[in-house]
Image 1: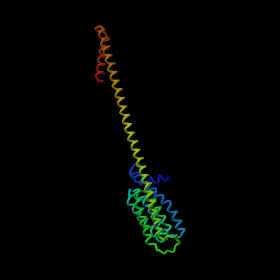
Image 2: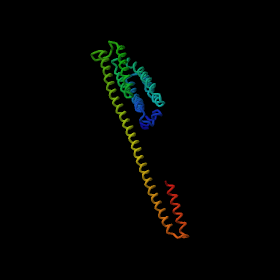
Image 3: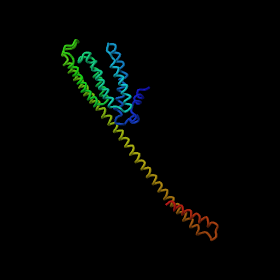
Length: 268
């Protein structure tokens, strides 16, 4: 089954056949992120398992992505994404804290998480930029000064500052990119709406022209028919004057005059 077909299946009913809906792009992107996470996370878990990590709680995070897909399909979007975000922080914090704290290589997950948040929505990404920095601060204050790990000079304050600056810069760049994409998407929709409106007006104008042409043709035909009937009546009247009384053509001439008058009267 194609990925697009899978994404369309998980779309809420109100969005399936309405790509111009204001929420369509946002929900479609969330579904893409969840499905991508479901595909990629098992590979990450295998790597962590190889290095001796306990991945039980992390596996719950993958199952949670699957549950979110079905919640989105039911139209429960904001609540499901909020719960997923908070639970993900609760899952990953112990792993990072117990694998070196502020020096942990697993802080890289926070960067990936931040990108996914901005991928979903700029406002969501902005919130998670702040939450990521708060999480870094918690790791900083809970990391011992003298830790039994080989680290570069500068200590944990330097590491915290680098990560916080990186999160801020990355968040700002993603915000600008995502907002630009939203503006471009909105401009595209406005252009589509303008084109549709223009086509509607053009169709209405052409329809009015055709109606006017039809009415003009009908008027011309009516006038020509009236003139022709008048000529027939006059010629039949002249013919009647030249007929002798009792001529067998009298009834036919009278019938022609009568029918012509009736047809002319009915067409007025």
